[in-house]
Structures are given as C-alpha cells and as structure tokens.
Image (cartoon, rainbow, N blue to C red):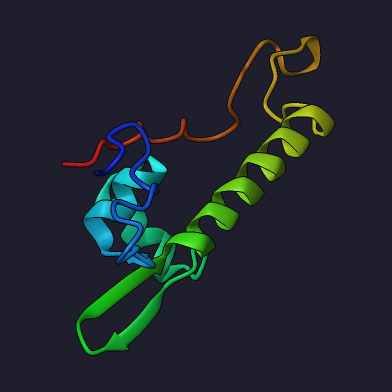
Length: 107
C-alpha cells in the first residue's frame, strides 16, 4: 500500500517503483509541473528520457537532489547576507531599478 504522506515511498515491495513521471515527481518534491519542467529544461534536476516523449525521474536521484538542495539552501542562507537589505546608505530603498515580478503560481 502506498504511503500518502511520502509520495517517494515504494508502494509495493514486490514491484518497486524506480522512477516517477512528471506529475508524480512534481508532487513528490513539492512543486508544480511547470516548475519541474523549468528545472528539467535548465538541467538542474536529474531525469532520463528512455524514449521520445517519455521523461522519467529516478526516485533515488530525486531523493539525493532534494537533500542537496536543502543543504545548499541552508548554507547559502547562513553564510550570505541579504544583498538588497534596507540601509541608511540607500535611503531605505529595498530594490534598485525595477521591482521584481510577482511570483507566478502554477496552474
């Protein structure tokens, strides 16, 4: 039986799922399919293309990638000060130039 709290959990010990298709992979790592597509196109997430039109995400590679992302994020946040912080020299201006676009949600 599949574990609804962990989409990466193997549903059946007799025939374990070694890879996920895009919808399942996106759900497993907590992003929308468009974000997963962008990560794949940028070469930032492990995937395989066994045939034309088929993209698979190996479960073990996703687990490793996700752990690396968490480590990188923690390291970056603890060692790098914010670059656009408010201060007296900039007159309290948070952004120089155009303000960043609002983050788009996935549909």
